[in-house]
Image (cartoon, rainbow, N blue to C red; front, side):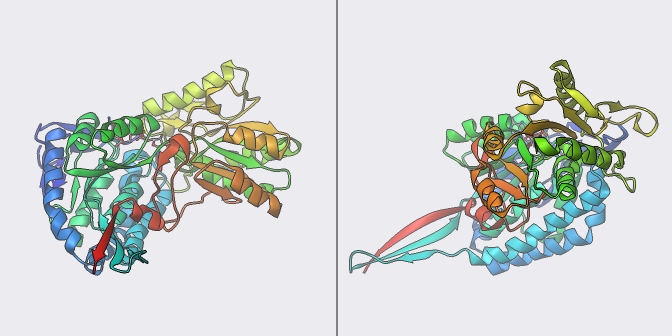
Length: 481
Ligand code: NAP
């Protein structure tokens, strides 16, 4: 049995959990098991933290050019194995294969980009106000980083944290989501093949609360970088506060998508499709509220429904499928509860609204892509994150009123607007209280651009040189001469 159990990667070795416990990973399209995985806890986490701590000195003292060789090796390996990584992601969380391949390539891109950017961690010299002093600022890695990632982008989320942390000279302990350990394990096999020194990158799997507690309480962890729900993020922030650990938080979202009457409607429908239905609506930057100007509500709704009628829902591994299953039954029930709540409060299901249960759908967690109209602000879809393929359409009168509605939320991750009025493009981009704004762009993310939220959507930024800053301390040195 132990040969079948997938292991954790700690200090350059593949090991079973101290508890000897395991669990099964389930394919959400078929409910079939796709792997058996070690279920670790705080004891394994402590070992991984010790290994990362011991490896820190050697890794941080390498030159950036030396570190970049390992990152580039990994870049090549992920590209070479992208089809396999995509197939694993699709099997463990249902992502359509095309999207999964795109994700794997995006993950690889992070390692290539930070391999280069790590060479540009510059300090500063500052003119002194005293003739006998010279002032210098240097940047140094924070130390051991603990990275906790979600299941919705299982490979890219790992890459977005590991690549800049390693480039900055930090060592890392990763805890991926329980639903998606298999793609993380495959990534770590590639990490091993890339030749990283032992202890530099470690993988722990298992009980989130025990692993989280060890990460927050162990003084050898200098920084926690987390992507997941706002509730868990707040708990980790509370824990981290006791030792004033550095934190980066990429949390939940509730993105508005605004379509003005002067928009190119076909482009807006395509942008909405990408921002709402990609990854089966399970993205932090997903559209959650669709605001359409009154004069074009009917035309836009018709075009959107037409697009959805031509969208294939199914097992992500089947060619042509654009929308896969929800990740598990709990997720499906949460999304269904939002639909039921909207119906009870007078909403109209303009398209979809049902769980798919017949034939090819009988064993999975499938939901029709859904459009709700006659929406009122008291409906959950208007203020709670709907993590699924459901969009409420809310008509609006003018620019001022829609900006007010769009900003009326505790979240501030991503927002979108479609308009062909150039002045309005600038006004809207500045007025939206969000960390990422897509103007006539339904998928505004790239490796080199900052990614993160205002308000309760997070603290800090991933992407570009902004991510590196999160893994560096700033040291001021004053030389008396
Ligand atoms: P989640 O329940 O918060 O889980 C995220 C990660 O935290 C998982 O690895 C989970 O482990 C772990 N975790 C749970 N409880 C923990 C604890 N007490 N201590 C330490 N770790 C703990 O979120 P999710 O359902 O996986 O992901 C969906 C959420 O993530 C949505 O709110 C979405 O908006 C957000 N998200 C944000 C971004 C962003 O960049 N802002 C990107 C993607 C997703 P287990 O899996 O083992 O429970």
